[in-house]
Length: 364
Ligand code: AVI
Image (tube, rainbow, N blue to C red; front, side, top):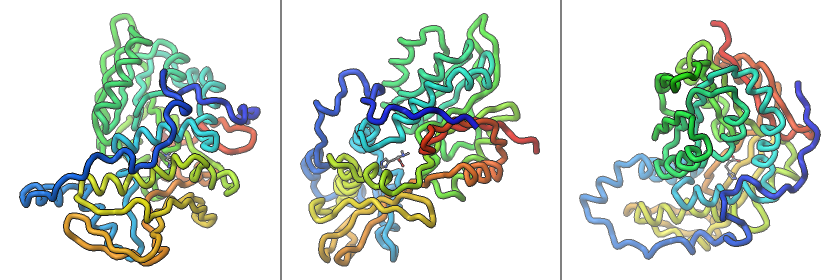
């Protein structure tokens, strides 16, 4: 076990993009970003929309006894911007703690990865933490960022190409949760060695999967990655609601805007009529399941319409929008073992809030 001394408590977020500052872009209510409401959908367009995965998840989710919509739909362009803003908040300790841990242990991760590694990043987004790893690695052969957003990939790749001109970068637009195989290892650039495949999965995104789904995902990755692969994964371990609740319900209302943006997205893309002012953001800690839940709580009884269907909310009824599981060390080890990974190393801050783990394929 590698216990690190404490990270500076409220370090300014050094990983915010150049020109991006929280002071300059004060959090806005999600409603501010809504374009003028579109007119009613034409029948053929409505049929197409109705058949989309987003529409199906929303219609199904609003029809449940306990209304819920998968968290993946929080991330349209505005949602992704708001999430980036969350990562720079004082209250949101996971991002800065992970950056700090990666800075502290990059050389040891590089030693485990060896020479000529191909780094495959899952859900790479802005790839903001990737340079910490790439800079430490010995002659990396290639970097393969995988993200569902082509725009996010394009922006990240452009800046990484400037920073690492000799590195082969092969972006892949895909939903990594649905990948059955990983791209073939690209040939290393002339004169560069080929090493092992290193999957990089930072950001505690693993916490947004139920434990069962996390085992399924990690098992698929183990299958797809090949025998020699290494997986570097960041996971939040915090169990203290005094820290967790402010992290998911910050003073400035950025997380509230992130959560409510889902309603704005439904209004815009699915012809919905949610009144954003009639829902409150709420963060809850479920100690039994060791997860933070995000909800939108109805202010009063109300009806909403989405794609021509009506749904009723009772006063105080909630729409559950996200789970963020917090994995203590023992549970995390057991979880990865079920998925076919051997836990080799980890680094954790001295308050036990967050850990970066190094996993290897376990012998079958
Ligand atoms: C992306 N994911 C790891 C974040 C989390 O902490 O679960 C999403 C988030 N939701 C609210 N704040 C941050």
